[in-house]
Image (cartoon, rainbow, N blue to C red; front, side, top):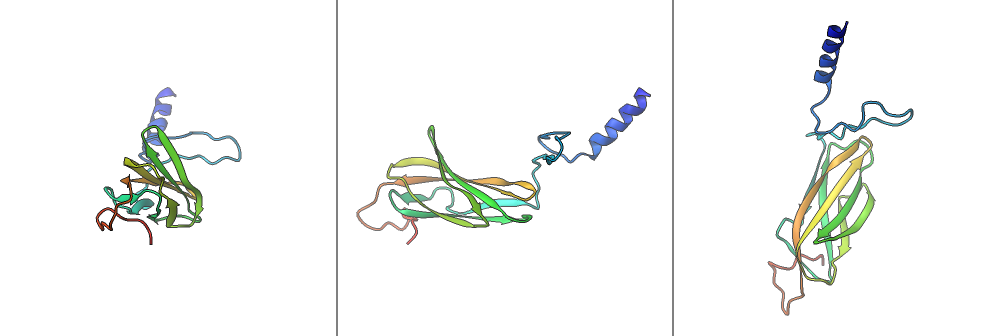
Length: 149
């Protein structure tokens, strides 16, 4: 009997999707089971700013992204990470593909902008871009000024 059970378990394991982590095998009644598997048909990508971009301190800036393969409403969250600081720039952004925000007045050489998104099926993904916050210059410098007009 145990030999048969081993075969059944092996067959069930082969039938599971190839996930890095399975959140739960059995969920309490009324809750969904989530495996948080990467799905190549559901993607999130930051379109702008590109890594290496600079934003002028105190200006208004925009981060834009593209979501593909979403099911239903998409909720996005935009965050900035630098040093030991974490700032939520915008959250629960319903069905948006860009977000305008105020660049802090503090000069920071390396800031990770992170966009994460979820849809009706759960997590779509996360995308990051590494940028800088720089002091205003005396004259326009097209290579170092990416703020929104």
